[in-house]
Image (cartoon, rainbow, N blue to C red; front, top):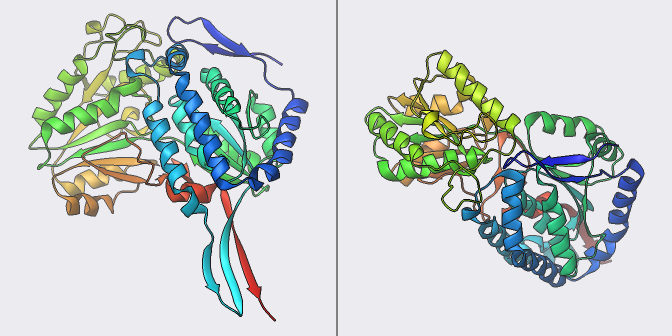
Length: 459
């Protein structure tokens, strides 16, 4: 077996490498998780909640090293810190609603019958986590899964190998048994063999559409539950009544933060013709204000993409669009740190159309296309003209208008006057090629539990 290498986007060196588990060792890890699950589920709910929160508290104590490691692993500037705001908020919310979300629903409790619906942990939960928000995306499933009484096996992306190790270190130090939460390093072949062998009861995967399809193929016929968050091409729509400055600031931040490597980042913007020229001018100025550079520099607001091959995809999309008539508003020469590799200057494109890959395929980089629209109908048609559906951002001053437009958009979440945000009280879900399943909210507990009916009669 070959070691799995983590190539740092900061300087191109091998930052870390780990040997994947052999198939035998991987099967043994899954067996340990299976054996430990009943005892973990038998612990009082309050105890499981306390241990999970203690694990996250331990993770908070590692902040300095975690922030530095994130910069080395996937390039996020250290000035933005880690992902602790979201990690803590999501943990606290899911912990707070756990008792109610997992409580039995009593239908009847009389001298003749006791009938109720209970929720039971599914068993062993397998998390395959991505590199772009490696702590947040793991927490989304890890916290409710453990609280609900499941054991968890985590396989992190090769680009963020150290994240799983830090999380396991924190949770084990807090008292979560090692077999209850295991971090593993697996190659694709071993991962697929475990899935085919029904080693898991639920699999949560965040990644590419191709990766999701591979997971589905491996799980075919096993009836294993799947949660798949795959590609995205999230739109923003700026209506005539929008607050222009707020729309520019939020949508451009949503498009370019984290070098555009956000699951629900803004990748295409549609602006009403009355605001189009002003929006484009302000959007380009916003992008020019970014500082591309080494993520350890306090002035850097835009770090490298996580890998030069990811940047190559975005460069190709931009080049093809420009060749087809798109107009780039940013001169890469204004960003001397752009090295043709992982360090990529931001780009704003106009004169774009849906015939271009940059407007139809996931970019996952610091580029956004802007199109002029004449009314809501045109905007809705364009927003729906996508194989993906994760979020959509509508800019208006009226709740009812936003809701009415949102009802016609094929997506998982509708935002009004915000973007690139995740509310743990609301279900995180998608449609079309974005995948299926859900996390967070009370429905997040439903993903990692199964209903069990009790129909008890006295004779």
